[in-house]
Image (cartoon, rainbow, N blue to C red; front, side):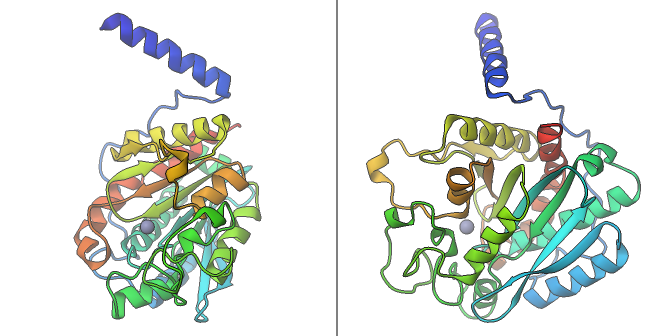
Length: 321
Ligand SMILES: [Zn+2]
């Protein structure tokens, strides 16, 4: 047993050297759960307008650490805010997006709370290495129309306001994706690739800087999908490295998303497909909690506490690369 473990360790080290990666990033020492956020409330259903109000409050509370601008406009005319957290002249950046699926709105709230956590930590001089190395480009609600529909009309709604599932609308192998042929609450890929303004907004944020990696928050399963069909070995290795560092802290189960049978692939055109195959960058899909929508509301605090330390860890994985 001992021998096998040693062999595995050596294999991992060799693999790490080949991939040019640093596998030995020590986890963030976290003695207690992160503080309860004072601006972002985790206890109740979080609407688009509450998010906008909190963004203004965060910018006012931390003027040198958080800035915002509109990254685009949804199909129904709502501005899609982008937050830039940390030191904008840091050499690295990480893009984080949440709630591309309407009914998965709890991850907007937890992403906002984590942004507040780092702003307060940076303001107190904590995580100095992360502040020096990395800033965070955050789209906390990628699909505001879908979130609003899920909160007010149809709790199972995943699509945007046009009935397009945005996570199937990206131009990467879009033609392979199957599903409904007309607008629907989920899984309709649209009439053409990148037909939706929300899709184009995420593509614009993804390419405006040379982001070192991408974290995509969805809701549910307590799992992390890290690999992608057709990803190159280099992108697969880096995505796996990112996923295992995040998993070390939030304890979500890792799932290799690579299909065992390429002929059976029916869903491409996702944002992480775009990240891994088109941009050739590492990306992970973090599925938080065990329920979606309002049913997952009671898990918001746990999701926040488990995932707060992972952003610093992701930054440390890529620092100096
Ligand atoms: Zn989702």
